[in-house]
Length: 552
Image (spheres, rainbow, N blue to C red):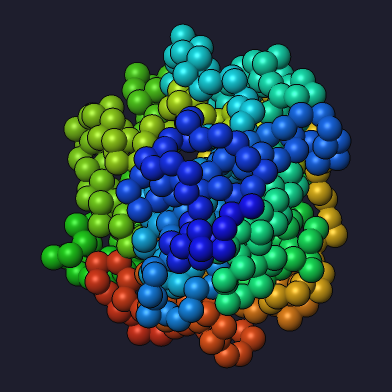
């Protein structure tokens, strides 16, 4: 037992410290939440939890939390405890999120909270690890680098690639005590409960102004599915749960493509509106006198990349056209995810595309743009540790896609093409599941919703290209007394528009000063520094760009 004086000192520091300047590798695992200073203002721990919560005696797993501590004397008020965060994916690292953005999150949510990230099962620094490293997979892929194309060969390349991590991970991580069987979102939700339980027993938990036994959480994108899973499994343990960029649970667990890129074309259309409003000095792609004129210029470039015709007629540059078309479509998706940052560079890239088409330099253009957005082909995908994300999504889908051929998947591709003129590339995140056969027994499939102790907040942009606002509209009513924040803006998650009104609402939610159930934040300054009059939807309709499919 610690002495009363020591406990008081530790509480005043806001952490429990065994060693200074530790690393995750040097931390002794504990079933208590024991922090040590690891990197500057950050504190790390290694929580010992059951590998399999349905069979606790099987083996142990290690969850690695990292903390950016609350300010000792915060202007936001008394210390309120810990907020867990998840950056999405699946497969993204919560540890890296806090390392890179802990101070920014604290400013946005409140410096009177500890910001805590952790790596979900099978991801990053969690243990056990899948032990089927991406470096090996990438090397295998590089041995046969077919040119990626949005014809069948492109989609087939991801199906073929999916067999490599599937087979290797099944062999090395598919046993009862391997990571593969324990990477579901349900398992990670149980880990979150273990973290909350451990935190409640610490001096920090005891001094928090809020109930330390309740989860306070901010999840982005896939993190909203994790948040909905936790809130549905443990409704009486929900404190403040903010879900930003909402994933639809039924769609995610069905195939990952339904209700995903529904509003992607809206952001593409808004590019032409903003470019016109910005004028030729700010937007390099400006032409004509209306947004429709800029769209017509873009459409002509798009039609110049007819990979199907080039292949069918045996054009000498057909492979270059196929690669450029893929880069073009993935580039538009990347632009839609981060419009504030990407509208300007994409405008310049589109000018370069015209020059490349005229001068026969598509290869150079493709390479240059890939440097901006990342190479969209399967070889580069192999270098991103895809086995980590696949272990989550394929298990959450209960291996529905395993063993399917391209013909059996084609309906998903058609579905995405129906949602957006540039949407079919999104299917590549599902194709890898055709090779993943590791099955988990701990999969939560609903029902989603319930009477939670705290009120859940759903956050959505009107034009989120990958997690449409429709998901929040349909899922929020399933959680009793849930709130909705609607931001008239573009990009993936409520962070993308940099909307000051929205930041204020999210902060007031976590500080318990929010008023009202459903809140609307109007459009603020957008790309090129332009402030449009009216809503994005109104501007698209006025420009005749509300439905791009109708214009092809």
